[in-house]
Length: 385
Image (cartoon, rainbow, N blue to C red; front, side, top):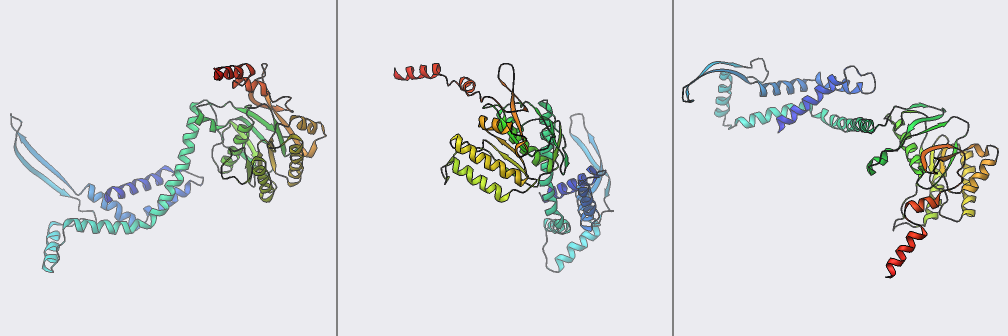
């Protein structure tokens, strides 16, 4: 097993040295690491030991077979040992070594000598193994991203490397949410072109229209882009973010100290404690856990203070009347408004256009989920029988 482990180390180092030979990016450091390993004395011993283990000697034989298929004679024609290897010892040397050890009272078996050789070779390369194992862990990330790209291509979706700038616009073509893959759903891409001034975006639209999925897509894209990975979009331009704060609606937990509104207010507090100018802030259904009048007041407070803080913020809400009043102001606090795009039948296209939604289409959502008077009444009558 130790021989197999050494052979695996050799193969990995050889692949690192040759596989990134022309790399000019940070992956070139893998090639440099492999070159350093290959130049060491420990590496030379490892290669020669594996060569000796694989090619100790070559034997040419002549075999005579009779008509009945039995071997009549078996003759060794030539025996050529690997004399150029540092681990080679002549037959006379091996005999003298055994005799000397026996004369001195040592009883060493052949397996013990081989074990000693292996220990010496391991000692020569052991200090390279921890960074090599760490490198393999890092490579798993790149392999996972390549698998992600291939998976998207098979589903007819495009990915790209984002163009990042300090204060550039946010333009995204074919943006999609890869989290939908786990649900067996192929996401519908959308486009965003946010080039006008303003760092705050309020998003309105019907339930199940894609607002929360959009926030998830934006957060994942920012994280992947700034990590140097593929972005789930056909083309992406985005500003660099100094940090990211995400508040999505979670299911209630038994160990929560506060209710839904209290938990959300604590998140708002944490937002202003940690966020800095230039950060990316994603807030889903801000202040939806209280009555509209009080929720709108807190919403307006958060919006105003975010305008002073200066992050890029995307906020979804069902306070449609409140959003409409804000939109009627003259560029209030640098706010832009997006709404879920609807088709001719008032069904979401999962795209987004400028403006404020006029309805949340709650009745349509209820009908889709079977929550209508007729269907509920039928259930009541069935249960009363």
